[in-house]
Image (tube, rainbow, N blue to C red; front, side):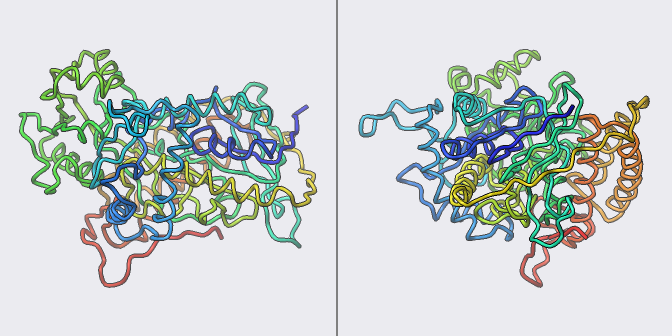
Length: 536
């Protein structure tokens, strides 16, 4: 018999955003955290670079705000940028209090060692706090350890959310729509369980797995965005997919990112003949924003017919390289590349979903009692392009603001509504799992070919025709067979792919991360506008 659970807050996702929210509210609320795997399997764990925040006397909020707005291509919301930047330092201090082992200088200020700050593309100052080149791992381990020790936090590992439960979906049409829980597949028992909650928070990360090449782990399948859309939430700017310029190119090196901090510390991008080329595209060279660097690498690879280009940091001393980039150094050595001597072969790969589910400054969505935080949300911080290392900052700041909003409502009376059990009476086990793997592969390939770094009207139209056919097949499959984790993720990815394509078709210009050969210039005839999609 499938089980049912009741909690004050259900958090779907166990990365930086979800864990931070849980820790902020757990003294007051009973919290459930759902993770697809054994925990620490999201994008946070693999983040290398760091967290941007104003922590130096030579830096300022105004400078960080200006850098974010500039990279955002005219679409970042100034009030969101200001809110996020100004709450950055206190969140770094919170992480320090929890014990995150950030890298420090051998300089003492008021009895404490100063944090070492690095610089990344688009930033006017050194303001990236980091833990060597494995910031996400250090942060994830610390947050996870604290969460597992808290008596009010319960982890449900190897669970994947199927859909949100709302009052309207349950047939309660006479009251405002609100989220009251979720249907969740227990991957071990293979039964769909019911989770009731006063508040639900989507912290599921982005959707970069929609592309063939990505720096993200396998779980980045747009689950939160897809579930929020099906529940009735609007989305914005789904056409803006950030491609990280430098992922390790090696047949056995799946999804391994070469941190932007390598370029921040003097790494040079080289053609196969050893010549630098970034100065031909932007006066900032290797420190230009990611969209410019990714397009430059893509252009040169296509021009030369090269399978990869190169990133070289070997002019720095071996001691410097090993101390600053130990993870990258060790991983590359496994593939026979000594970065203290050799250039690193690199290619661009899908890295970050800048659009997402619309929220306010509290992380609240269009549906009452439903929040979205982290990469699954569109807060207005990133606009048309994300400034490096603003992603973990956004996770922290909006987890904090969502927590304050939830805690302000926790003392109000609440009556749990009975949720209808998941009906599996008319489905059977599939004998054609190969259909899912074929559809998964087809989706990711045509998204890479037609909706990638450079787009055209014809490519987008081809992609839309293919995604519609896939959706028909998946709907038939979903209706007739017992659901699996792979089917849930494929269903979500095809929906997110459609939202990306629809948004890209609506933008008749090139701006930020969206570059169209049919409309190569930005449309300056009117003020820049978000691409907003609303469910019918």
